[in-house]
Length: 394
Image (cartoon, rainbow, N blue to C red):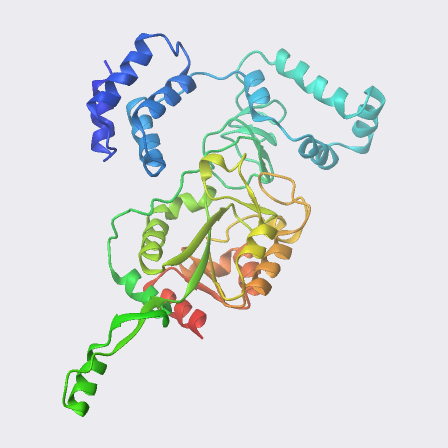
């Protein structure tokens, strides 16, 4: 029954052995998971994936083998989303009239509002499509999925469509960039090589062939010379935008990430979404539970590091300019505050944008971030990377 799944995993270059596959079948036969898609997924991953580097490939193979999700009721969406109360409070301020807000306060405040919302969900037994009030699909209501509203809140939709949502209630899962991806071209590596600086330090343990030949010729006998081992002295910290509109650029960013891993011995990388805020993360599978304070990152890596941001800088201007403007959480400080701190901490910095440079002038947020970086935004082209490496190497 699950043999095609096993073959799909092998085709995705996941090293699954027959023993691991049989262990997975034993778990299924023992009834460890029954009518539980999430449990089945974790059982399969636990049994057949032994290296975290292969988890992204496993997710893709699992989706290919078991496409489709069970139906989710509105009540389940509300309970699973873990909606932050401050989001609803801000939305209430924006979308309710003063009379409606006064009525809510008379009813008992925010707690009563949440209770009323749950009652409305119970009343809305059927799927609602179209319209501008109910939580549903294909309408103009500010709440729901697969519709259009210039400043809405997306609920229960697997991916972005118009990219106009101010807030997203779904805890989307982003996958890590694969550092082992095969490069389509070696030119990216060639461009990154411009940043490499070789320094001589450590013990004198490397044979200096040219010096030995010169000294032997001068002395008339064999005079062996050594020199300190050559080491790559450049240190790079890499911040990668992931998810949302960056899904369009996964391939080229993976190529850049893979090339950077190969070229720079001292490379540390972190993920963020849209703009830099108070926390970042190393693993997108744990981005909700294992974040790292940005202040801690700044205290860990000194100003001798070269700082590279990679992102399309496409977002709501609110996310850059205002507290609370972040797409997926409530940020106490505006994104531009954190970007200025990063520029101050790492004076050698650039922003690499995978969006074609000819389109930058059409997006306000790109203009804003380019201004924050004082023009040190370069396109993800060979010429752009070459220019960026020259700027960092000065």
